[in-house]
Amino acid sequence: MRAEDEYEAGPDQLEERLADLDETLAEQRAVALRASLSDYDLDEEDAAVLSGLVGSGDGIEYLPALPVVAIVGRPNVGKSALVNRILGRREAVVEDTPGVTRDRVTYKAEWMERRFSLVDTGGWEPDARGIDKSVAAQAEVAIDLADVVLFVVDAMVGATSTDEHVVKLLRRSGKPVLLVANKIDDARHEPEAAALWNLGLGEPYPVSAIHGRGVADLLDEVMKVLPDVSAVAKHEIGGPRRVAILGRPNVGKSSLLNKAAGEERVVVNELAGTTRDPVDEIVELGGKLWRLVDTAGIRRRVHLSQGADFYASLRTSAALEKAEVAVVVLDISQPLSEQDVRIIDMVLESGRALVLAFNKWDLLNTPEMENIDRRRYLEREIEQDLAHVAWAPRVNISARTGRHLDKLVPALETALESWDQRISTGKFNAFLSELVAEHPHPLRGGKQPRILFGTQASTRPPTFVLFTTGFLDPGYRRFIQRRLREIYGFEGSPIVINMRVRERKQR
Image 1 (cartoon, rainbow, N blue to C red):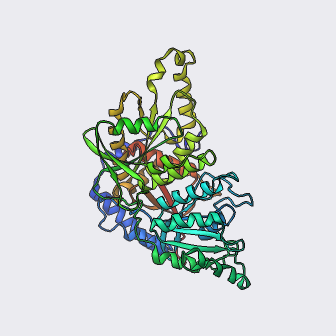
Image 2: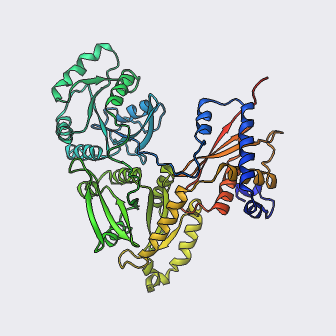
Image 3: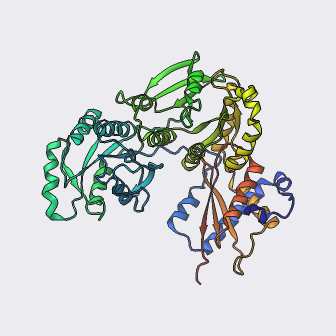
């Protein structure tokens, strides 16, 4: 039994009651509920969420792209330790083995009330012979994706020929670069950092990523050169909607890109900046212009046998950072893989809208496929492995022949509409009160948590905040999400539900 099934006591009249809702009355009730929150201890963040509601109407919120800081350097100079220190938590894998790979390479960080994306480029595995080439390729990726680059050098080893090779790339890029002299654990080692002036990147910043020494000063300097909005992953308002085409190698992404961009391509638009900037393509599909965001330049240049998964992951992160909706291409001629699911989970984590494109559909009717009854197995795989994204539109296509490519556009439009959807505070609180009346949260330790007030704090993705008197079971939150989808749609968009457990003020 699914955890949320515990909360269902058979069919309810929720949909019918909400259809008959008097919206003016619902808004008045929501105002009263909101006023009653004054009896509870609220913090500054709560106040910001609540004040953000004033006059928000049904407007759509456009969040600017966070500026991007990339960390580059040779293996084992302490990049991952620096990532963890900046994040204030252990996220990146830190080992003494150079080039330990990991799947996740983009993190959200904050300093002095400014948020930014942190890209850790440490996860490749160079061989001894190709180390210069590998480090250079990794630095090139970072330059492409970053607004500011932190170049980490092991000050106790000093600058190597590999470091000098990377410096040339960094200087050519014209982007702000801060030279980080790591492993300066105390003042006695400061002269080692000073020796790095001769790299020609300006003042070296002595830090100890492990102990935290000097990292705050370094971040203060980063803030001086970091733009408020990313120039690399900038979000245009009112331009063509931005679509990332993702998928593991050989599932047909390139065929889909070529078919979409083929004869109908309007323009290949190279973004302002260096020639190494990612290339976006504007294509016409279904009578509308779409911007296909793709780090195509990186795809062409990086052909390393090792660390391929790492680069795929980095490219996926970069494309998602720029996109509004992701099309994840799945090859139906093969079983769904762990990598397919991992890419879908990256989309969910990024909060982007999602469309699933099942490619090579034309192969299902070939004798080879019919012999293994692929269609039956596929349905079972979808049921088991993709149950958590059952809400995503599915399109069955053949990228090679172009079959059903026209169905991609309505799916994209549906997903983006859901991503932008806002439910008024009155409607949302009416939904919550009717839901709780029909399916109350079970008692936990003799107490029953109550939902005091709820609001949609933002769109893109739709994010709801619930003020409660106690912790709601994850199953109950999933149940709320599912009923929200059943009544309001949200097809193709993740829904985020955040809880704020608040206590009554002491009189």
